[in-house]
Image 1 (tube, one colour):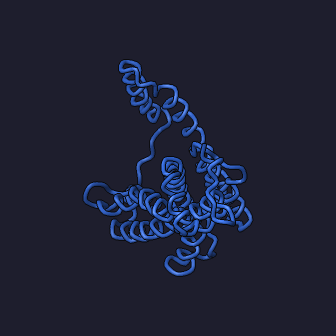
Image 2 (cartoon, one colour):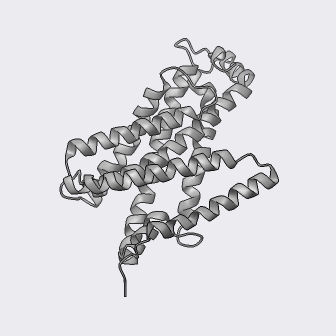
Image 3 (spheres, one colour):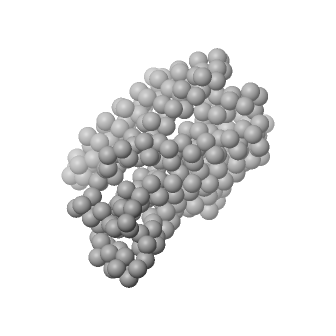
Length: 263
């Protein structure tokens, strides 16, 4: 028999701070230099989640398309900035390119979910669109960030190899294609690994949350399978688009490598 999820009083939730205290003590004792980063991330994430919780409660009750679209654009802007900000050698204007890549991949997954599989009414129902968009966007952001950093570092360390291919008559895209494919494959490993061990090593987050809220496990599995397939597709599309845009910045129209941007 399924039961409704048990609420957690705020005063009892504060007890999880003990885990942070343990982490800070461990970092201090072993000189790991992660204390400040962990503290700032914990405080920032907690405040953001509390604010988002109240905001989503209001958004779900209003169900206005313009508010859903505005929320998605804010999420997209933050994700694009975070994705580009992790690159060791950011390029001017790359944030707009990242926004286009992440937006295209995420929109593909959300449209497929709303128009083909789940089909909520209305189609922009924030209870479905926002959580799905958040999961897809977050995964695409991580994939694009990993791929972009890998591509940049490979280009920088293999300048001579790329220029040798160019001197042999290969085009710019052909010369850097092996580096691009390695970056794309590396960025997909976390998503593929999670799918490969789902249900055996771990119960995925969305499935766990639905089961805790009282949803039948079989229904939770259906939604988790849906999100996994959409995660793979949207992450691959967003990451590939981002890499192609990044590649165009490092190659000139005459198929020369912009070495000045790598050093």
